[in-house]
Length: 71
Image (cartoon, rainbow, N blue to C red):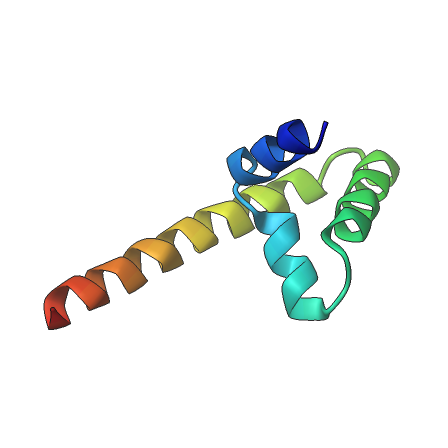
């Protein structure tokens, strides 16, 4: 079961994990809040989640590019 959970965390862009580390709370708690707010607000946090996923991927590629220039 833990392997499945780890696979889902990696394939889901790592947004909840990233936010949990930045705020100092467990990523499972962030996921739970995300699910609750998605039901309450009829899915609008999904747009925020996708924005964060895009931003994290762009940030990762920018960091990769900087390392490649200096090496």
